[in-house]
View 1 (cartoon, rainbow, N blue to C red):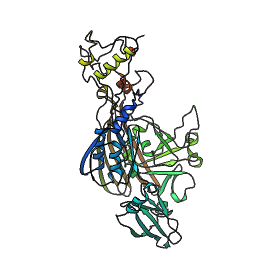
View 2 (cartoon, rainbow, N blue to C red; view 1 turned 60 degrees about the vertical axis):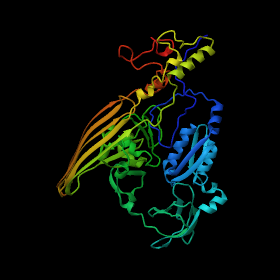
View 3 (cartoon, rainbow, N blue to C red; view 1 turned 90 degrees about the horizontal axis):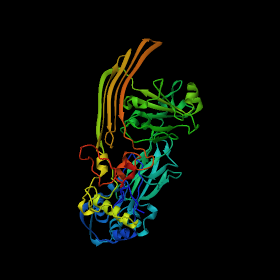
View 4 (cartoon, rainbow, N blue to C red; view 1 turned 135 degrees about the vertical axis):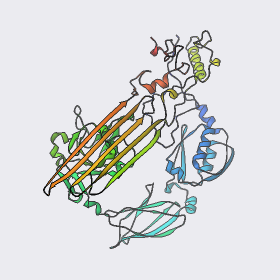
Length: 528
């Protein structure tokens, strides 16, 4: 019985390669992969030739990729921390090249299928002979103005290796050259010391870090000094919010508050997140926290310009959320926006612009390879070859070229930009803060975007010594256009899934200049 196929098949010499950067695909992809054991054996045994002088590790890895077909997975900072090296090999196997490259470096590799994972060598995993040659010994004493400090953590930055000071504040540790030591102790500021290439003796002076207890924290009933707080309250400051471009304030909480789970539901432009402060307490009702901005509850987080935020406080326990009643049962996120200050008037302009792009395309068969595969599959199933040259829609495989790569049709390089203008100032009686901003983000999928136009005005006036009035106004307009990317099963479950499944032998447009639609038996899911 003849069988038909509606899936584009991945080329057996290509696999998805991840190089330690986050992958900005907003999709769930169903992969249908052909694996041949002899291909892997051949790739590892084929000859690799390199001739590089003072080249970066990244360039050498790129050359190995092109010759071997293997991909590398690594943290960029691990590779960039290694100085340029020289390597000269002629027709070496893949394993021989990797042993030659990483033998004298503080990096190790592991081959998993077609991916080669690279990570820093653990000190304990370095051979004894190499350890004696490369490790340096760092001795030292840690003290404060009051005397020696015992129990100070001494960690090698970027690793889990470390030690602690003894009763007299002394420590000793063996590390790789050019490492950094991090000194931590409760009640003192963290200190980072960059080491050189030689053994050394350090004298570390720790500075008290108790000033943060004087910070004022916003709670449900007003403000209070951090040292006087008895409930569970956490704070995200303005500098943390500005450390990376974000579309909404919930993104600023991600990875910054202990016990608060922030999960990105969708990476589409303006996509939402799931915030859980006190876990999941209900199956049917909402588990989202209550968001309060300058005292007013809100639900549309995309309407708030993150550049207007001065601080975010998270109220976790029952005593801190009692003022909000049942609405605060899942925790409360208090947002304080910027207000005017006494003194000279200021004007601040902030802007950034960037480009988002697809990190890696899935390697698929081109039109000729696809036609050959379909013919072979039909013949193996007892049928006749589909692409037999009998009509214009069924040419011979040799008459086909690359065809249509539907990923190139669907994906694009997408700009992201943000502009913010703020005026603030005031005198002893009146303070003001006026701001306007524009945020625009194109999606890497064509025709997906998010735009926001926002304005905010905060004005405070001291009428009497015992009376202060103020006004907070905000206006925002958002516009979003999202492509359907969710996968619901079948070949038509989302734009990305369709781009991977639609046959490369089909053109983008038909003879009439409209989008092509297949009505043949080759793709029955798309037929009329």
